[in-house]
Length: 155
Image 1 (cartoon, rainbow, N blue to C red):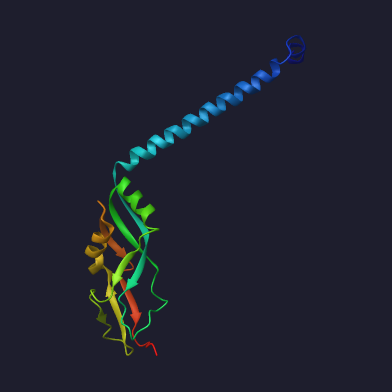
Image 2 (image 1 turned 90 degrees about the vertical axis):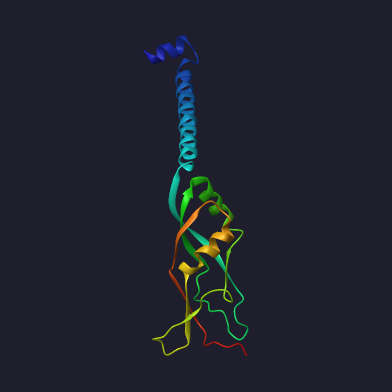
C-alpha cells in the first residue's frame, strides 16, 4: 500500500523521514537545553568537592636542592558555591599556589637518622586561602604532610 501511495503522491515517503529527523533534532535540542539549566541551577548551591591545584615551591634554601619527590599538585577539599569552585578549577591552570619555605613551619623528622624535614599542610590552609582570593573555604589539603630531604647540597 505504501508503494502505491509513493506512486500516486511522489515525495510522500521522504516526508516521514524528514519529520522524524526534525522531531529528533527538536528533542535533542531541548534535552541539551534542560541539561544546561540543570547545571546552572546546581552551581548556585553549596558544594563540597576536591580539586587538584598546582603548587610552586619558593624560597628554598640556597645550599639545598629541590627534590623531585615533591608533588606538583595538591588536592584541596573545598566547600562553597558551585560558581566559585568552577572559577577555581578554571583559574588553577594559570596561577599556582606558592609554598614559601622561609615562612612555613618546617619541622625535622625526629625518628629518622637522615636529615629529612616535613611540612604539615594543615598549617598552610590560611596562606592558601589568602592566595586563592575566593569565596570557597578550604576544608583540608591532601597530602597532609610534605616530606623533603635536606641532605642534598648544591656544589
